[in-house]
Image (cartoon, rainbow, N blue to C red):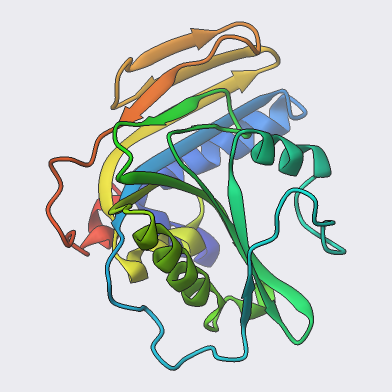
Length: 242
């Protein structure tokens, strides 16, 4: 077994590693027509306590609106950003020394995923959806991620939000580690297989299975945190690889 494969197994576990290798094989064999995604759905409690007391003071957090120009080198297409604003999403951006260091997006009520065809819905105004947390590679060992979450926590707490839900790629070990550090609770998982206009979904959440043949057809997954305890258990590392 190669060193790289052993590392992937240690980071993702057997199931996610097998699916990740299958996803790569399908994409290569089909010249990109077949794509496979596995998502883990999690919730984070919006606490009163800061994550980074007295740390990351040189990181400036901003809240741009839809009229603000995208920074140079912004790693998302302009049309994707416009669609997010049209859905009612907002964003926080982190800056260090005049350079974009990271961002995250927030939305209430519902969010239409832009990687696969699915709509996420929330059951209560006390819930929020967060998505697309990005940190510049050379900042990923610093305080950018936690400073972004601190700012998001303050904003959400002020609106009466107590839980923020999100999806994590089961094939992204850096994201899994980052969310484990701030503490999350597992809500479920889903597998998406796409080929051209066709998409199959298999999920632990209702409706469990969905077949889509065109862009106007998509499943809706509902998230309910009303039965979760506050604060949540932080033992995510083990469950994330199951």
